[in-house]
Image 1 (tube, rainbow, N blue to C red):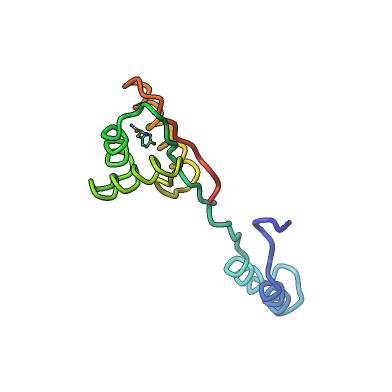
Image 2: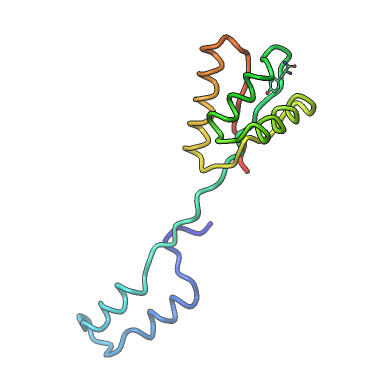
Length: 125
Ligand code: TYC
């Protein structure tokens, strides 16, 4: 497993070459190290937000959800709703974890407020 602070072979070579005088405290060393050593954070993993079919939530409500929380127009929202209706599950969008989780919570709260059993969940992309 690599840590976020792992150095590539190229970085190690640069650091080795950077020790210009071999003396400790050489300002040239510190300047080189400060600019060439850096963390390499991994890009945040993505999560699919899934909508599940059920027998009771009205089609119009699902279309409203897709327009409101996933910024779809009527045509896109209708297409995704019908896909979920026919296949049982469909992807509303792919987001970083915190955004995906917020979307799921918003959909679940809105469905519950309107007494619909609509289910929305996350899955690692
Ligand atoms: N199956 C529902 C109906 O016939 C419509 C529906 C579509 C419900 C998508 C949920 O995620 C869903 N009224």
